[in-house]
Image (tube, rainbow, N blue to C red; front, side):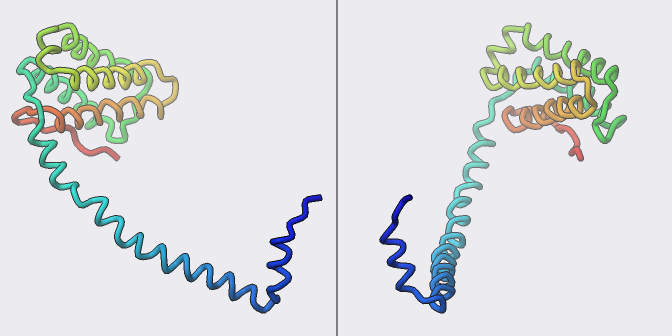
Length: 176
């Protein structure tokens, strides 16, 4: 048996009428210390959001013309599919067909070393992530998994618009 004389001594000296007051005081002190911290922290945390956003827009890389053309084809293909399926739910055959169609464009971008060099590492990572989404669309057995793959590709197209300077880029419509 473990003997805790200190705790026992403290509890013996507190009457049962004082115990709720101690608990209440502890809660009050916690509240008094926590509320100012919560009120001050959010403004400090988001103080530099706007300058960072404008810096990010200024640091965008100009997308090479061949990359722009192929990304427009991918965007048009996905927008057409999204208009046909607003809920982004594709059958297995539809998911596979869309993944193959978009995959051909991705393969042509990745095969062109001049585009890869000009676009840089960001494009390589972005296109690799799109490839992962297409693989999920093509191989998934469940409708929800194909939907997640399509959403991944759509999000990557949005990210393309943030990372690269592409005059006239319209992006893709919002999804539900």
